[in-house]
Image 1 (spheres, rainbow, N blue to C red):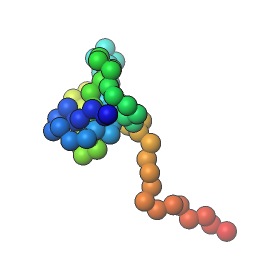
Image 2: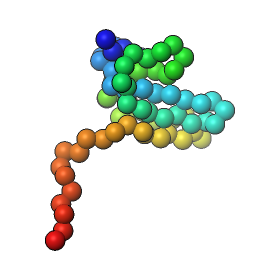
Image 3: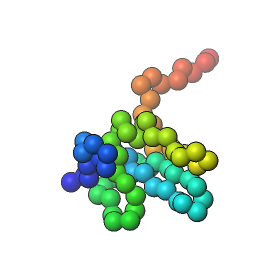
Image 4: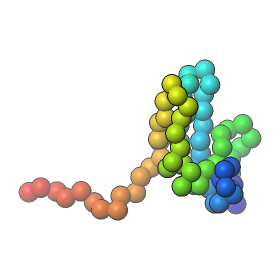
Length: 74
């Protein structure tokens, strides 16, 4: 069973983790339940709209599935 989004309660698909001392926040794929203190579960909508506080950096480490494959040039 997966956790629900910390913001809206929808099924979660991403994990938001942050480091106060480094002033950074990052998103990772959610592979299972979130362990206490490991971060916050977010649905895809909230993860995609996440903006860090002013002066912080955001790194998206989630794997992306492409809608279209790149064309190979002969």
